[in-house]
Image 1 (cartoon, rainbow, N blue to C red):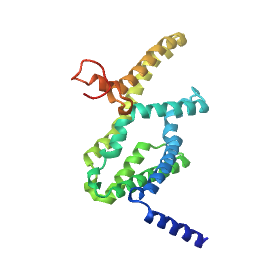
Image 2 (image 1 turned 45 degrees about the horizontal axis):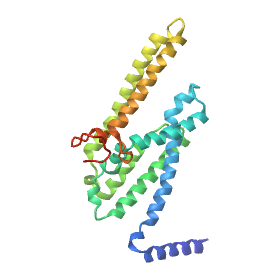
Image 3 (image 1 turned 120 degrees about the vertical axis):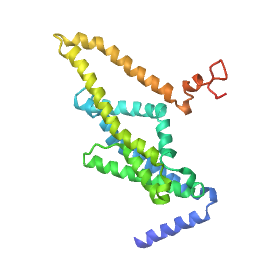
Image 4 (image 1 turned 90 degrees about the vertical axis):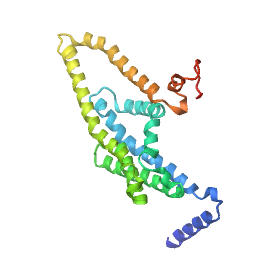
Length: 245
């Protein structure tokens, strides 16, 4: 067994040493793809489960329906609204300019961050702990940059904003949830016949949800899909166009 491992190790080392320069880090790219799929699996096992836990627990949707809805809308949401968050994770937390001469180190650090985040989310799922995938990848990215470049490699001002959002977000969510439940209880649940009032309120809830999503897509923008925000932001041309003037 030891001789087999040694043979494989020496073979990989020889292949890496003889590979052209542009393929030196191909193994890291392939490894990153594999770990990215593992990370996506761990996010689905924990983070997405958090989103649909109340709906499944209350019986609004079945577990199978939740999986189907999550597969569709998590993908659509990431494509339409994930650009800004991805940009923050990619170069908003750490000073990527410090890695211009050591790009291999940045690649290795990014792969390590994905691996660490995936492992912790899988462990948390096994222990039945609801955690945030965003917290995991932020902490992992900060960790590798802190080890690689010290405190100068971390954008502390951006990190402080993110940490503050971890406290503000639950507070705002709780306030909005409380207000919504108060209105539903006052105008629907406490009525003599709540069903007609509930049916009349459904279009309002649907309209608010769709309106907020559309506004977010147009305001945040999806660069790869040539978002309408780029059309509206064009001040040099009078006609609508997808390209920047």
